[in-house]
Structure formats: structure tokens, C-alpha cells
Image 1 (cartoon, rainbow, N blue to C red):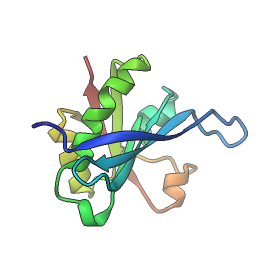
Image 2 (cartoon, one colour):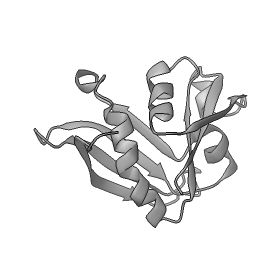
Image 3 (cartoon, rainbow, N blue to C red):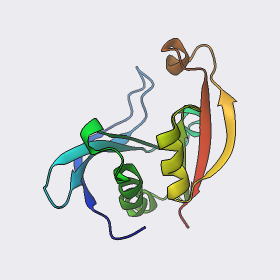
Length: 142
């Protein structure tokens, strides 16, 4: 991909919370360089817990509707790569719903490989929210 039109700005870091089961993570704003507008968000989950590897993924992103179609999620993932490497990741997992074609194309655009589509366990929050499956993409950072 060409030079990135976005940068990441750290918004907050969150420690693990054993009471809620939350893993430590970092939240970043996706910022359009030319306008300095916040166009979305991306986060890095700092855990290799089974539910992160299988269902939630290490990286989650969202681009505001007005800014979609410009590959900002892919550029944001590429901007996240050195941050993930700094945290010791050699590979990260990104998950999305099977019918989320824009997210699937984002994964493919950055070079992540679709490994499988898994069924969500019935006791998961995502299942309770109506989701049933996740595509699991492995992104080799090195």
C-alpha cells in the first residue's frame, strides 16, 4: 500500500480486569493526516487468551461511515504493526463476521490469511448479541 493517509493517536490504555474478564488493551484514534479529523478507532488487545485468539482477535477497528471506502482500516492496521511488534507480537489474529465483506477485504489487503471460520460458543457475549460465527485471520508481522 502507498504512504499512509492516517496516523494513530493513543487515547487510553486499560489494564486487565479479572472481575469482568477484560484483557489489557490500548485504544487509538485513527486520524486523517490531511485534515486531522478523527475518522475511526482501533484497539490492540494485549493477550493471547484462548477467547482472544479464537473469537475476539487482537486488533479491532471501526471507521466512521463518512470515511469508509478509503482503506483507512487497512492503513490503521499497518500503523498498528510496529506497536504490536513493540509489545512482542510476532503474529496477531483479526476476526470478523463472515458477512462483513469490507472487514474481510481489509484483512486481505494487509496480507492476513483466512485460517478458518469458527462457531461462537453459546455462552459468549458475541453469541448473546446475535452473532454466530467468526472468520479468523492470522497476520504474520515478521
